Image 1 (spheres, helix red, strand yellow):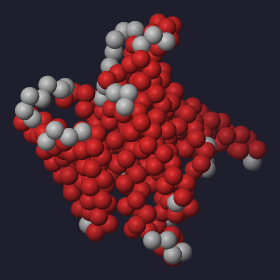
Image 2 (image 1 turned 120 degrees about the horizontal axis):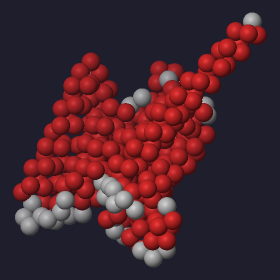
Image 3 (image 1 turned 90 degrees about the vertical axis):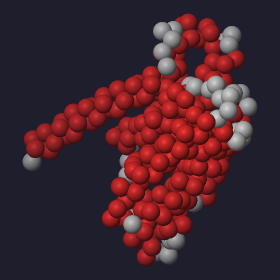
Length: 282
């Protein structure tokens, strides 16, 4: 840890990586809360894995991969949302197909990109140490967009997340806000791609919010605690991976996964103690 702190003061790429992790934590803390509460992790996974198609196409045509990822994520979010709303009986199969097709298309485009020398593993598993400094401005802008939309539509998202039927009875346009929520998930996925990659993105999107949900029970508090936990996991994972030269993304996820298991066990013990006290009181 001391070695990392010392290196942080001397290497700009480490400072950029740390900033990227913190910016990603903000997005995953806010939007990940909706994903956990709404229980749309599988839908978010479909969006995340289909993004590779957009990144591969962007590389093939000489465009910015991040822009291709954002475009593919938004299209996938709308398509998956439409599938869920129209064909709920076949939802799992159709989303799984889109998931696989998106990754297959991306790999084919990357394989046929002339002169392409990049590493496919960095897209699949992330490489936070290679995040360009200029991408921090893009990440910051995406975070600002997420926060602005959530702040403006908080009550509608709250209603749609907990009870769609009641929200519809109260006049909330459920379809619009559901699709908008999926689009925000898509933007968050793009935020996390460079940090932990496509395969691990769902873990960082959901684990901090799931841990927070063990201990606090209002949506705003879950968002706040999930954001703080995401910042801790990304920063600590980067620090722990530095000295032994480990991949930072998987290290972050292992740290978050271990914290989730510990939190679940601790919550189980707390609930048992409460049950015993109630039994004694009765």
